[in-house]
Amino acid sequence: MTMSEKKIEERLANRAKAKGGIAMKFVSPSRAGVTDRIVLLPVPPEHREIVAKYFKMVEVKAKGEVPRPLQVYFINQITELGHCATWVDSAEAVDALFA
Image 1 (cartoon, rainbow, N blue to C red):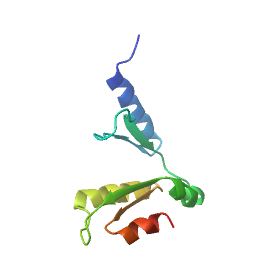
Image 2 (image 1 turned 180 degrees about the horizontal axis):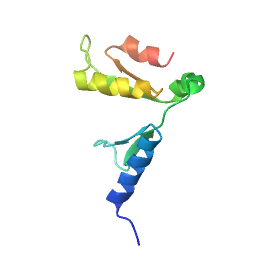
Image 3 (image 1 turned 60 degrees about the vertical axis):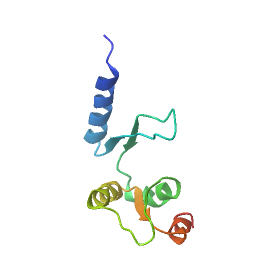
Image 4 (image 1 turned 180 degrees about the vertical axis):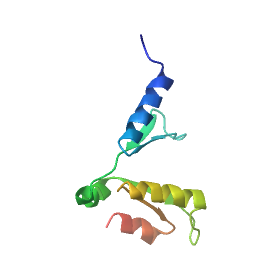
């Protein structure tokens, strides 16, 4: 018996949730061929610094703008899992991400 793509995606999301993580649906209109989901599992505290060096989720805003409440919620959710999630509103903030 073969499983449908929808059922496999549901299983992926459920397994990630069972491990304390999330499996976010990923859409990138400007780039063909991207994966369907981004799976983020909790990062142990002793590994957070190194993970943050290589994986960042970044919300981009115009100078002086701040994330909307739902964006703040998402950033906090990712950060609580031990991943790097933040927002930038300037060239200097971008550069700081790569320092």
